[in-house]
Image (cartoon, rainbow, N blue to C red):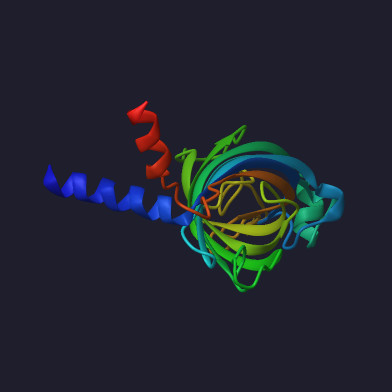
Length: 235
């Protein structure tokens, strides 16, 4: 119990020293790569949205937890080989992601000494993705999967309370059914359609606006005038 209290106390002290917390949201675009396409296609861009809470531990390091919705879609209209041309498969799935990432700023962002209003940053973390609409053709799989978010972005301080951000991040998955197909699903003349060694990826890029709960310190401590207080008491 004492250890738990100590951990909670340390967490509160770290957050209080950071002097501010952020919460916000944004909209963006989502992309997919896998057995159907090997790189994001502009015509297959789909919408996405996110909401987040960010803890700024220092001018360099932040931690963000976010809930993100993405719509992913692709088809064999942009086939990459003759088998894809014959397959003519397509999908349209929804992904709901809960993630936690650390952000590292390459400039001393929001520092009272340097006053940089913008900073590029890199991010890396862990997430859980729930996939809806996937119907694999030959075996069942867990539709709640672990993902690794990685990428970067830029933040710009509009005011003391408002921050504008742009972010581009990839999600590495550890399964091959984001598109609903994999090795052994469908075959034509003993040629497989899927590649079991090529795991699916998805991407999110977007803009966001966040509100900072900024703690404004009092520049001078209040010291009561003892002479005035003594006069009041005398009267």
